[in-house]
Length: 91
Image 1 (cartoon, rainbow, N blue to C red):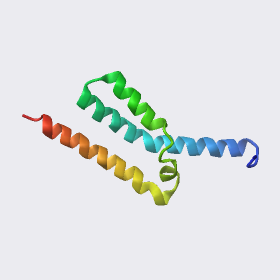
Image 2: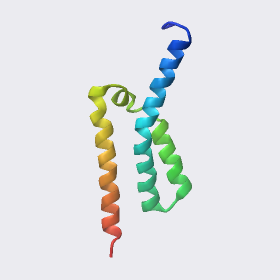
Image 3: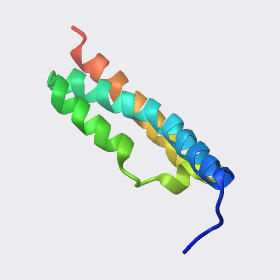
Image 4: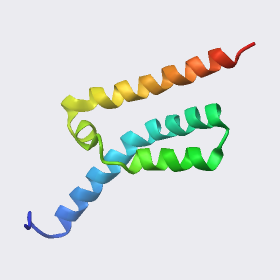
């Protein structure tokens, strides 16, 4: 199925992809930071964070303005896990 052609259609698809990766990357960095702080395994944490960034689970929550609450709740949930990890490691 063709949705139309030309360079403008490809540019629009590239812009959407960059927008999605721009919104997911802070959460994937938080996933890496949380896993690295808890497991101290750098490469395993990086692999899981890369899979989290590439997995299309929440594509519609990034692409639609009304569904951005999923991305924000993931972001703040990961921040709370990191804060708890810092609290638990404190003497």
